Length: 278
Length: 278
Image (cartoon, rainbow over all chains, first blue to last red; front, side, top):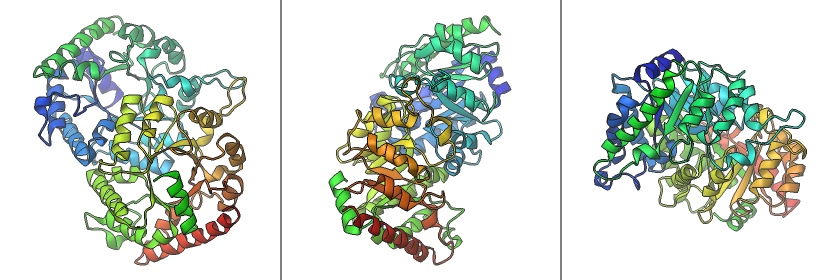
């Protein structure tokens, strides 16, 4: 999905909501268990219920890998289902990959190749290994690399805020700056945690037009209002993710209905925010 | 495999060779193609040929994922085969994972859980997201996290050498220092590229007893002699990886024989180095 198509989807749905599919057999409604396709069945129900309010879905690879080979089969079924919808959405493989050039090429093939098993629109990538670990993800037309800049977790403070000698620039700022030369606003986004919303003004001076994928609203405590105040652009420029707050809103028979209600609540707040800019 | 078992294996085989299974359908001998099990058949032939000279095998996840779901089935078959051997070897999932705590827990389950599909001894992890992204990998008994410190690629210079304000410590040094509190020499190793062997003296002052996984000898140009000179400890403390130099020594019918010859050549150099310390 191109940048223009993404912006049009946001405008049409009045939403920049990304639903995180962190699908965990232990947390899903127990009446779905006992079927090899439990993960897919859960995802399908969540997608059907939340689709009117959602522009992006983000399966978290760890949860599928933890379910073994069948977990990956469930992911493929989920992706096939998303691709079959008339209402096209943006898809994110939340995989945090990144390795030397020839290996990143293989990861790009695994997740972004239109002829591959998954055919995602984008993939999250960790920047530690630098340029040749990132650029292989920028070569597929209409596909995206989403680079970790400032993450939402406590461990973000361990290295991401280290200031560079002389310049006084934080590591995440260096990542944002350097990577601007590796891609552009049409093929590169950044992960910026909602729990670090006060950093968004600063991030927007380095990456004024880039889309930001913002996790951490909801279960992790970030505020949607603050994220929009400091991070929104005239083209929106944000995909705000909620995972647990939506998909585990209930673990009873009403789980899909409750997920829809949570997604709708966020979408309505988002519509208000969008009115201010586009 | 515990530290003591690993050291005993190194002593017994007079080798600290890790063979990287970067198995690529495009590079493997063409007479193996046309079978769904081509990847496993190739791996099995390489393992059988190189086992006398090898203490560790390191499948590179990217190559299996690039082959889709069947690629993961091939990885499972490879792991099942390694587990079935009387001659026990150390296994490394070269996966470069790492995410917020609840997600890293799932990656740990996927790769290290004895009841999972793969049951690796260890997993490579990227440090960008800090403590809570790393510690979930240290909880399985006798299993290891192998943290990226200083990588072998060109992109390593983008961020890993950034010096911290005031302290003048490089990012990879900070990673080594901080992570000493997250694990210990019995459950944490570090990746240090052979192409940066001159940094090993410095690394040994921070992590004197930790095992180091050293890629970059061979195709990437690193020197085994230099790695040993600056990085070897009295318990060896090194796993030196070669991937392409061994597994693609030939792509003809003699591929396994040639792989064995390359592995043996490295093992003999390693035996000489080991004589100096243990």
